[in-house]
Image (cartoon, rainbow, N blue to C red; front, side):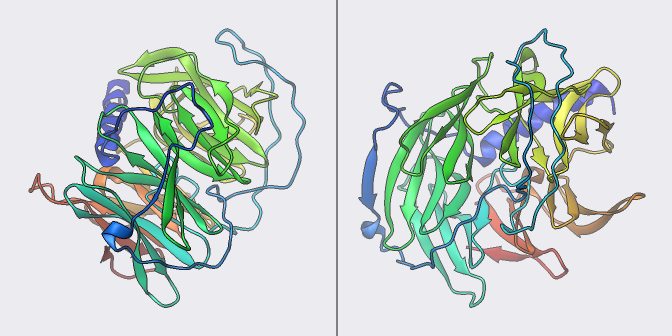
Length: 405
């Protein structure tokens, strides 16, 4: 596929992703107040179900390795062509049962071993989060937005008795991070801003905010800016993922194409220290797929030889490979299985020869989230501009999709 086709693909994915997240936001809080709890309340007025959950914990990143690594500290620099690398990691047990690319795909579904949580749209002006006990099938709303234009909820992650997610506001520039108690339904807004790619790792929340990568504790306190991007324009997203107690990320700032920023690949410690350039002959896009299976990275990028598209390399930057680029795709990974989605088809990696078509549906903007043995996706009737987005669940091991919510 020609380079300009991929530029159009990525631009289209961003535009659609913004629609998916219903980029509707409210007035941002004072950016100088990093640690203040903004709001705390309860949704009693909406008569929501009060569902009690067993205390449990699950990182949003599936693959975690206990192996250690020593790397040379190198500050990100546009003209740095050093050959510093990191040691490849081996994935441990798949305890979270969450898709490795859930965050880059919007994380509109997640789980903690007993329960699954997913976003639904009960009306044109409201979004909700449903908690479902997969052993009994019982479910109920744990959160419902107030009426607003293009309401949306995404980037769900859960730790113990608390659920965290991003909620759209109405000024199309800002979002809230909301923390909900799963025992009594009380909630509080713990952060606001130009927030993207919210995830939870080792008892801290990570997200991109105004072109920086930051972390806060589970109460929204003790904010740390662990990486500041050189670009300062929207989208404020920074591509990143976790492996072995390290953060792998793209350092966008060298150049942009059609509003997308490209830069070098780095790793760093969870506090932002030991920033180390990974030598790889491709630049990383700040948007789209960015994930690891614990051994390799998968990302949208740009190289002189293959142009813009989907790439994979080892964690040390070696074995760079341009992946199949015959059609636009997002991807996800779970328990040794790879999945690729187009706008209306879902494929599973069959063997070295290619992919096997496993389902035809309206995969809205090719975004798929995996929780346990199920694939979650959102569809919308393309013939009806007023149709509500509908959440679906498709068993990985076979069976038809069901509508949720």
